[in-house]
Image (tube, rainbow, N blue to C red; front, side):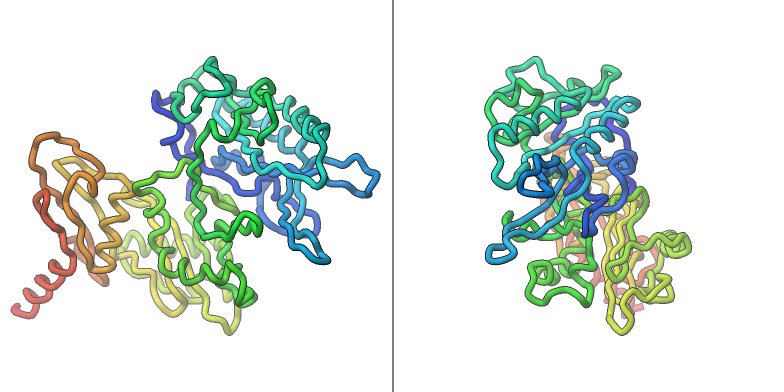
Length: 421
């Protein structure tokens, strides 16, 4: 999936612009653990503009002054007390950001609202703030920094003057604004993670790591295991769903790459041959068989795997999911939606109609379900071009405003017509 599209200086508020975000930024390297891949420079090049920075003061010994590093820890209680791991140093994070903004006049958000540590003093916190004074191109608004709502500022105030703008969102430590920080409440991030998570204490945010959910090594009693039924039900519709009514300001993913996404048995498939076969099925169109042969490997011998893909077509991001020995029905799809003579490319609208097609449901044709009233005071028609399951031809379905577009009724009529023929 291409998250590398550059930001443009549109005269609109910043929040309606979807930012690609990175959960647990800095964990491209971990001590005694594994997580994200790709350095922060790679992540920036791939379009990530919102970084979840979690500073921890890591001490090698009780008398050590400590080093500020990115980290993700959660309390366990009992003998072990804590679990987690630490990643790149805060100095490395800042250096990567500065190197990028030197040549790229774009807006970047560093969210350090998760900043924690063990037995931190006020001096420790001030020391952490001092670290961030090394960030270049820090965004400062002419409005009252203590009360400004960053959501409402036009994108042109952040970028468009030939320089980058690094927005620092900080934890609660008085007079942050004088150090270039804005309190997290000044920027309302509606963040969407692809998978469900347990509470903040457990801090398990597996955003694109299907092996933990679908792999044979998953703990039957873990929260990630409990999300399996949710993923199986929602995975085919995930991207359409999040781009619907409440469009997120940040879409957080792990394992950021710059192409379409194919995941099989928990492995991110990058084999060009597999991607070519998928594209041929999209273009044909026909089903894409989910098998070890077609996907190039058997990640878990003897285990029934699952496959999820995300790709771009017809002006929409589309997601499909299926189990081994079945097919991804790429032929079953919504090809276009026209309302009042206008071509609708809203992801929420696509999601609504695609789900109705798959589930043989209906959609009420009105302004709310079609993304707004483009012709106020005029009666409109909705025309949908679609393909049925195992269908080769594109069909057309037209319904007047305030009527129901019912795919079950349409399917029944088509079957009756074929039987009579």
